[in-house]
Image 1: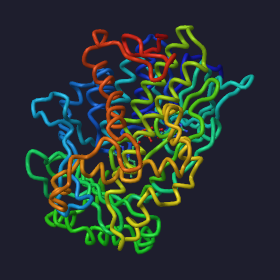
Image 2 (image 1 turned 180 degrees about the vertical axis):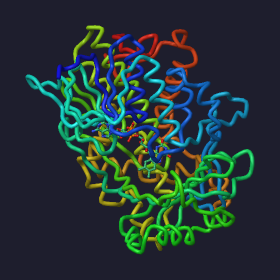
Image 3 (image 1 turned 90 degrees about the vertical axis):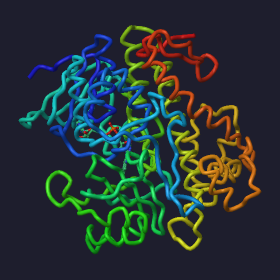
Image 4 (image 1 turned 30 degrees about the vertical axis):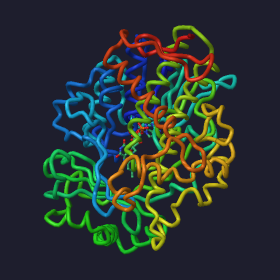
Length: 499
Ligand code: FAD
């Protein structure tokens, strides 16, 4: 059997892979996408962020199809979290007329299939039930893949570049670098689906509800008027309860979380069909030491993953896919060199991952129930994560080069002491004021000296650029590089340029 030739081969047809393949094909390059499963296939991660919908999906030309799919609109998150016993709401925008101030809650089998079929429409050669078994190397560079087709026949294909977006089970990540785990965000998720559960009061009925309880926290995601995805995220120790069976364990966790028990009171668990199973996922958070090697780049979960409470997974997968596509497209145009374009890729993706990590650590720090094993062990600033130098260095990336404290685990955490209180004051000022009527506005810097306001501005600026790219295309304003001498996106957003 002859070996086929492509410009780029993409492993995996999840949101990361479909997005990467589409953006490369949109520049006229020949792309092969190999996906092990037959779509539609199950995946968790149903709650999306506006950057995915109004940024990447708009650039992919999918806005209308997604709008017509009937997915519930998500205006933000409602939380039973922190000091307040009452649920409080974080909205993506305060302006109810903002046309970009929402995302969707999606059934992932349908959403992922839309992205995959769209890739085929863009000219990608999409092959389902094709499993990649090995990378082909030549002179220290990845030059293609060995794969098994739907008939079980082994074949090879060659390409100038390979994108690995085969998710958390990636076998390529270990060839590119080493996967380093967070010691802190190591949880187990147990989830099922319910018909007829309650909805939050309007206008928040499409919001995700996240509720902290003694053993961890719950997600509660409306997937239609009647269907709800419900998952308990608990420690590995609490997951011992699963020995009694998944159903018993999930019922036990629900009974321990009053708001979720109340919302599920009128509901029946779905026991048949595609949502009939109670599933378990270990959402260990990790980051690879390298995101690329000659000829290959890791995209989405294959490179890194962080705790799901902020619904960041699909955003990180699709955003990193856009960044990687820029790097592939620039090299396929024959410009710059691998080191330059893939360093830019890695730096930007690592920065976005690191931003979510810091945001999450503050958010987790808001729950300080010392009677609870889960929460007392998750006062992150005083946990063993402090000594997890290897992971913290990866989270920090190089983008914070002007902030030396970032490199030392203990100093990193000392500087952020009080970030959880700052976050609570910012997100839920009412609760803080009712606990302490003399509480003032959150200061710019948290107690440890970390500049929280600057951090938040940096956190949102890249997302704003992404949405501007989708909305304004070539009319958007010029972008500044992340670092002096760094690259910026081309006018169409699909390649890198030197400033
Ligand atoms: P995937 O979606 O995993 O896609 C990888 C694809 O590669 C799969 O289709 C697989 O079949 C294929 N593949 C694997 N190996 C091979 C091979 N050898 N050859 C060919 N194909 C292969 N994210 C959110 O945005 N919102 C949420 O609310 C959310 N909740 C989550 C809750 C939990 C408990 C967990 C664990 C994650 C959650 N996530 C959430 C994260 C989200 O699921 C992932 O981040 C996202 O699916 C990553 O996309 P991806 O394309 O990188 O990988």
